[in-house]
Amino acid sequence: MTIDELKIGARGLPEDQRFELVADLIGSLPAVLSDTDDGSREAGRRLDEMRRDPTARRTWEQVKAEIGR
Picture 1 (cartoon, helix red, strand yellow):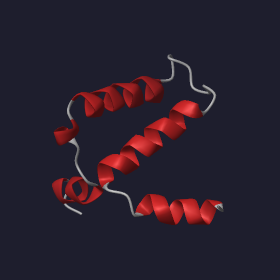
Picture 2 (cartoon, helix red, strand yellow; picture 1 turned 60 degrees about the horizontal axis):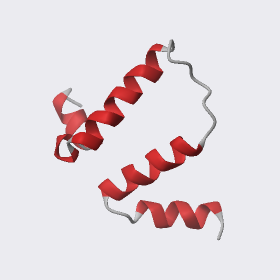
Picture 3 (cartoon, helix red, strand yellow; picture 1 turned 135 degrees about the vertical axis):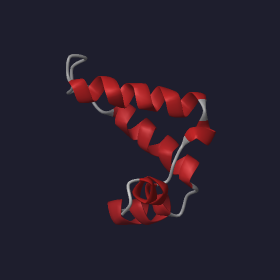
Picture 4 (cartoon, helix red, strand yellow; picture 1 turned 90 degrees about the horizontal axis):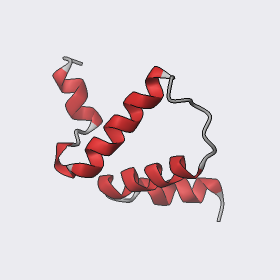
């Protein structure tokens, strides 16, 4: 299977399964950000929040609508 075939297959998954796949892939990478990196801590907080309450997720379309785009 090629990377392009994987991408096509992944895009066909429901949103919650795509999120789970992304989280698993990111978790499989070596740590390159330190805890002192302000983006790393915030990303971890958001990931924890989404895992605790999957209904709190918003689509990109919802976010754009909220900021008036």
